[in-house]
Image 1 (tube, rainbow, N blue to C red):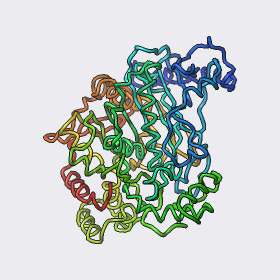
Image 2: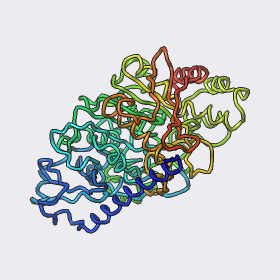
Image 3: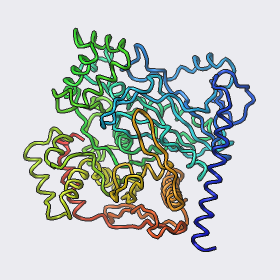
Image 4: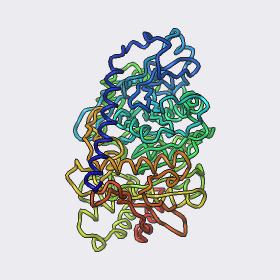
Length: 561
């Protein structure tokens, strides 16, 4: 068979598989959504002890259990408070002996604006759920390794439905994958110094949601065939930042055994005091700006979601200028998070587990054309001296254009240097692999390999829209082949702690990153569109990049990351 015929055959095999998937989805849509109306003898059911859940068979070898609650709904008096463990007695009583239908996606968490002029506000507060993807027939005792995925979106927006894992299990039906919904924007990350009195509120609730979900996984994932002692946490952007935070957080127990951090969002981790003026603006904008903080919190807990959504959007969209910080993200609370992650990594104070960390080739999270202004906006505590030193590190003479200079000078401290900030210290203590993702999102109309380009490839051509929406674009045979290569590397790492053990035969060996050998894999599809040959290859991390990132790492106290 020639290469064209082989590519065509591959395309039709995948298309047929997807057609079967659609048939299963349509069949399950015919099921009633009444969570108490299903007979206990239905197939694809898992008994977790307090309830039995019916999953959606999305492929013949794949079952998705969607919207499984892991904590109490954070509504009413629980708004702006740390998540409470799931009341399993309540769930059992509500089920009343019937199978609970988990064949459709749950409500996603309340969204903030994407920053593109859109208004947020869609979603629900009752969103502390997980989606679990498992091989058909997986059961207690199978002890399959677990991937725990944390979505990105700047801690402000994101809907796990937009990053589905059915294809991953279909390709590799020997893992269990969990995707977590966690509170976003002000609902997850409102902060003021008075929260040190936990009777008023709690810090970092969105991050605490992730921890609570990991605790649920530790207790119950074995019912789905998973091994609670073999959990790899994985996330992209704010999800990558979350992975970094989990590696340095004081969580009180071991909740994971491996980590994959993609395009780590290296945002500042401010103190609660540095968030106070944002709190005051938000409370006032929502109509709750008078009285003590305790009184304001009572008002905020009684406010409508729409009032709070307008207030959190207003802070991002320019109405708030009273502070250097204008978005709701994690804070340095002094208990769970006690230091800047970059600094703690350099000091060796992090979870020593196998790690994959990397970024795309051309990403930056900064906009505009002025490097000084962009750095100051992203890292408000940088001094004028810091800015001048940054400019000296990135002279125009090193770059092909002004736009490339801006992208590298902002993209490295924003995101890219997470590879060195985490990978360097990790390589001294654990097996570590790094990467550079080098395939543009084909729907972007650009050759630039921008932030989140790998999401399009790994998740069925997804492009995030407003208010929890996405658009899926059909993928070509070469794109499907490359996606399979990426998934194989990722799940090999989940299964064995090494991306090479179960990689595709066509894929190159991904050499580890070590202090003596600073190498990384370049992940890209075959340039000649040959589906049976990899386009990925190994390269040395350029010495100038390493030196620039060491400079960025040295500015951790002012970058606050």
